[in-house]
Length: 507
Image 1 (cartoon, rainbow, N blue to C red):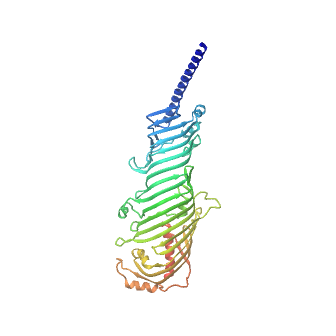
Image 2: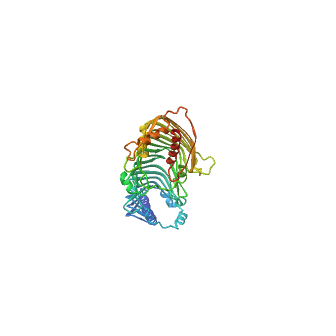
Image 3: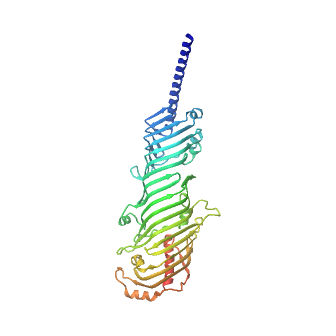
């Protein structure tokens, strides 16, 4: 009986000692992990209300942390680490977390503040011997904001719904990169996106979603800040006013990386659907005499690297309005039911021998009437910006052309264009080619300066010159050419080629 009591007492004492040891070890490790988290938060200029570690639950919580790093602030309601792998931390000091939840982060970036160079960055990354792995990371709510003028006016604002990532990895190598961690992005949901493009326009989107490399942006807009009259008061040279609405933009395999601080974007198929684009230009303003690059150069010299295999634009309405005389209404041209497919938009590997040509095929109804098809091909890697463009247009009544010709050229026409075909080769300096124009009973009336009355004498003279019979022989004019004004756009370039071809046909 005595031996039994002694054995029971020994077991009781042993369990008690073990319990005390575990309690001591638990408190010791909790304090050590708490201190480690606190020290690391301080190292990255972090403040917090409390760090709470529950070792037996393998959980840690940071309450109300905030960080200020090089003009960037981050405030969070709370950070919760769950399923902490204790053995990895005890043996190797590696931090492996099953789940990390961040609640309502508010990220603010102040780009108007000067950043000081941190010469110790490379040293810190070299001394970082541990590894951090977060198996599942979730962010609930919050916002991302960029300020560039002062701390009261946003350049960018977006409201975050939720973000989910897997396998977030931090080590000495990732810390050397612009984005100091690797990850697999599973889901990003944001809405109420706003971006201040310039003094005249802002960009907005109703929603933005990335789901396993699939991207969907809905209700994307470029919004003018002023009315057409108000827009003119904000500029001192000719500058277009844009009003753009896109129902949806989707990408099927979006991927991005960083290369020497440059953003690289890859996607195989991009669809842009439901576009309404209104462009307004006031020609009464002084000309913008800056050099206008052609599309090849524009893509070649973009600040980011892109590789878009195929882009499809569908169900588009494009309207261009030009005001040329203060006392008259504006001239208008439009393209409805516009659909286009573009292949090989890339500025990567420009020196490779098999660099692909960019190909555009577009169809539309010109002035809501004439079927139009345009094919264009150019080589982004070619420094001369060589291009080839062909097109054909079906029947168009002159009264439709008068919407632009009357206010722009002080001319009113009657009759019909039956068919038009053009074929031009060019580069950034000069283009030439051939054009065919068939028309029927085409007459012109030259208007008085006020645009309301016909100048009978000049109109009669003009109609003596114009061949107003139908051209049935489908003559080709081989010597159409034009030397480009490099202060004008590509479309001005094409317009002058077409105008030269039309003059050869009419006269």
